[in-house]
Amino acid sequence: MLARARQLSWRPVKAPLNHMRLLFLEGRLNPQGPAIFIDRDGVINHRRAGDYVLSWSQFAFTPGIRQALRELALLRLPIIVISNQSAVGRGLLDASALETITRRMQEALLNDGTPIAAVYYCTHKPEDGCICRKPRPALLHRAAADFCIDLANSVFIGDSDSDLRAAEAAGCQPVLFGPGLTACSDSAVWINGLPVAASAKELVGVVSKLLNKSTVNPAAPTYAPYGRVLT
Ligand SMILES: [Mg+2]
Ligand SMILES: [Zn+2]
Image 1 (cartoon, rainbow, N blue to C red):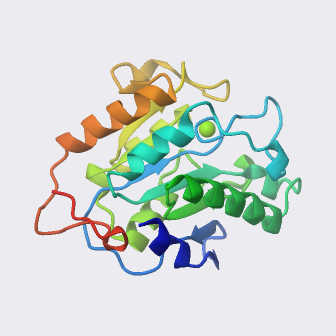
Image 2: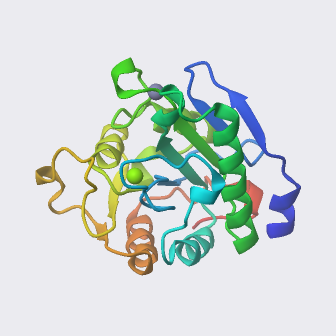
Image 3: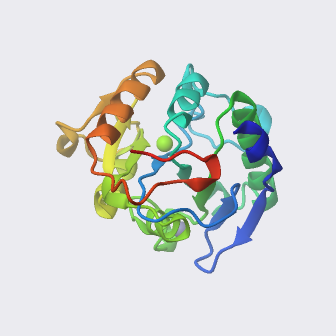
């Protein structure tokens, strides 16, 4: 699996909505399979308090997340990162630097045995009023169109209110990661009852259980690039 994934090229794509889309896997996937969507800052890597991740040296994986992602990769579902990166729109980070950080992250995870299928970034400022910034679901919809994903049977792992709301808006199952909503969150009331993975250790169990409950059409195997059919 790893050898095959390594052959695939990294390919930044200029997307018409002016978001950034980085595809790491080629090929049309089989239709209507679920995906594992995941936020970046605060889930894959530490948030920087009051600041942005502006270089690879500032990118620190959260404890246990690499092992958790490695185990989730065994489900052979596309793992797709959905992230707001307004530092680009604010002029603090240029797109090529964000691409470099992303490539380094993808390479590190691939070395672990965790292929990331794609990364979608909204690079706008909140005040731009774009359609792609979470909690809006446009990036999830875009990924679903690119990879023929069945959103209703997918999960979205995030640490903030905007992640959970984007998941809800797209019809995905939200999973709250971490000890609680982050400081950026505007409301904690509505998340009562949503699945929570307080740590990376809990993440695999929580996500696997949710995906096992989903209805997957056995006639529509998912994620051909990894050569396994989800039943
Ligand atoms: Mg986050
Ligand atoms: Zn946007």
